[in-house]
Length: 195
Ligand code: NI
Image (tube, rainbow, N blue to C red; front, side, top):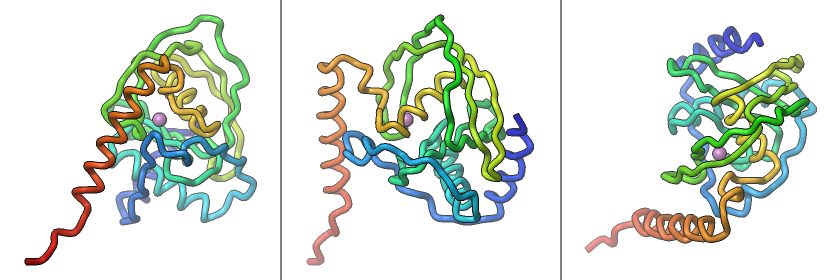
């Protein structure tokens, strides 16, 4: 994939720009369950969306972000599983062409479910077709962390959050914990009364 070159161009754009970060929705926000529509127009608006998403992901910091998580319901994913944080990949309208029968359990986390990590079993290898920001399609195979990340982000586009793979008991505990944190955050955001 020409992802390396693409990422270098994007990173240099990112460093020069100073775009506002987008707000990441937190589970159990119902907007995380919306189904994303395919991208049909590959224009400057899309490039801006991708740039904002990449900046938001790096700043968070995270290894992947789906547009759904910033309340944009289009099939756009950014990810970077490199240790050097300089190999941005952009997946538009991604499709899974093949999955291995072999499955693996990975401890997953999510920017929309902060502080929670738990094991999810998925196919260990996948073959993907996706478009880049210029509307050029390519196919690639992924294993290891990249395979996990791609499948996790593609779930977001279908309105699915990784905690939905966990038992209802665990999911409810996570839901209450995050709802409590959200209430605390809201309290902190209240203006301090002037005396
Ligand atoms: Ni996620």
